Length: 89
Figure 1 (cartoon, rainbow, N blue to C red):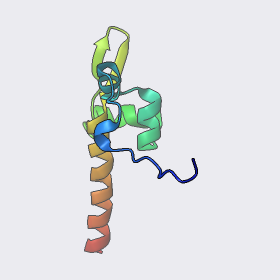
Figure 2: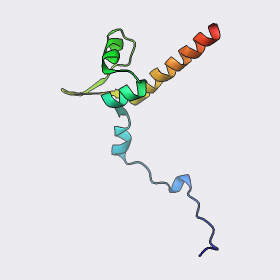
Figure 3: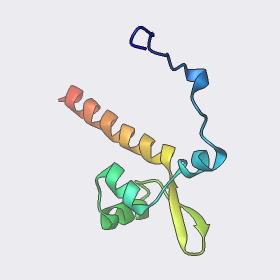
């Protein structure tokens, strides 16, 4: 058995995510948004009031979530702003 070559795992052999997993990864809840942005709930709410942070999607009367790609874009925009400020100095 020690003489056998290790088996390769190819991308097309990998199991695909089922539809439910794909849908759930689209949204982020408060804890994830706070972690990803490193901001508190209060700060996020203030930024949203000023139009400086992505708004959540109302999923049900008592449930909101943010679109993951919008939060990721916001974080990337903040990084680009920092780079631009450093280069301008």
